[in-house]
Image 1 (tube, protein in one colour):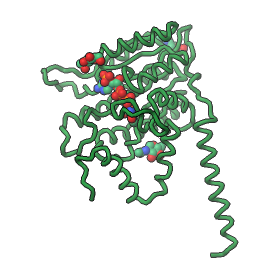
Image 2 (cartoon, helix red, strand yellow; image 1 turned 90 degrees about the vertical axis):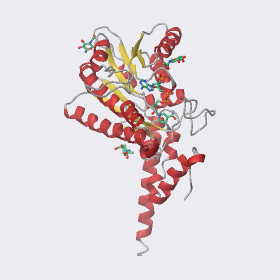
Image 3 (cartoon, helix red, strand yellow; image 1 turned 120 degrees about the vertical axis):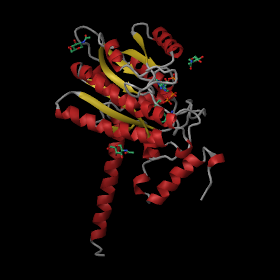
Image 4 (cartoon, protein in one colour; image 1 turned 60 degrees about the horizontal axis):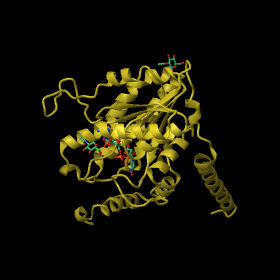
Length: 321
Ligand SMILES: NC(=O)c1ccc[n+]([C@@H]2O[C@H](COP(=O)([O-])OP(=O)(O)OC[C@H]3O[C@@H](n4cnc5c(N)ncnc54)[C@H](OP(=O)(O)O)[C@@H]3O)[C@@H](O)[C@H]2O)c1
Ligand SMILES: *[C@@H]1O[C@H](CO)[C@@H](O)[C@H](O)[C@H]1NC(C)=O
Ligand SMILES: *[C@@H]1O[C@H](CO)[C@@H](O)[C@H](O)[C@H]1NC(C)=O
Ligand SMILES: *[C@@H]1O[C@H](CO)[C@@H](O)[C@H](O)[C@H]1NC(C)=O
């Protein structure tokens, strides 16, 4: 090779790396969160945020951080006792904010004529949800409810069809329908924000097929909706925040560490990414570092690392090739 080309290749690679590092520092440390844009009063009424799955885990911490930032919060969950407990706790901690409860089981979505085991139509009533929010100025919607029932890891052919359907309803269909129903209100109350909580399992983790696939649907729909709103000239930010492992939830009980932050750190990190200019972002910086090398690795190394990561959590079921 012509030896005069080498320094140029070196220079271009160094500049590209420098740009990537500078952009990382900008997104994770330098760029201030734009959440305050959505804390506007309209007609003298204070702004409200709604967090789905706020009765536990990261969702509860979203509700807490939003209240701390000045929002009134709608606490959604499916268990009345748990939702009431969180409402009580947050009302005591933030006496000047308002909280209200909203109950719905996100996995009960089927069709007009579908019946549950008791022969009833127990579909989520989205119109009732819209009505329950019609008297408040909702400016933030966080689609956080999600997850997989235990045992978390299962081969597809060993998973009951009901579980595949409820997992997809919870993680993909419910947030999709909720956005379609609440967008008119969010557009009217704009500037407003929709945050969808994803998972790094969307890279294609095995034994999590319905969950990982649902989160990828959420990833793609966030980009579509974001572009639709820009086509319409509406000031509604749609941000998909991808989440890696978080401690103290059903997935793990270990103490927080650099790569496994606690729920509060995770919720804060996600809110700090608001206004970062992307429609999909890894919320917490160390989670982003964790997967930073993947695009440079050969596919077989990536495949191996995903299989090993899941395999090490399911030792009894895992047979190494
Ligand atoms: N924790 C992690 O390591 C991790 C990693 C990647 C992504 N995430 C994502 O982060 C989000 C929050 O996860 P988390 O770990 O905080 O979960 P969590 O501790 O299990 O809490 C989930 C919340 O969603 C609610 N929920 C679950 N199923 C529901 C249903 N069918 N209908 C209505 N509400 C339902 C739960 O209510 P109940 O209290 O009634 O169960 C709870 O409030 C999820 O979208 C998850 O996929 C988490
Ligand atoms: C709801 O939550 C309470 C308190 O954690 C628990 O005791 C109860 O079993 C839960 N109900 C259901 C139906 O899961
Ligand atoms: C919320 O704010 C918008 C924009 O100012 C207004 O048109 C709407 O009527 C308000 N909604 C409620 C319930 O106050
Ligand atoms: C999610 O969307 C982002 C932004 O377009 C993309 O870079 C990423 O590859 C997507 N993730 C998956 C797993 O599809």
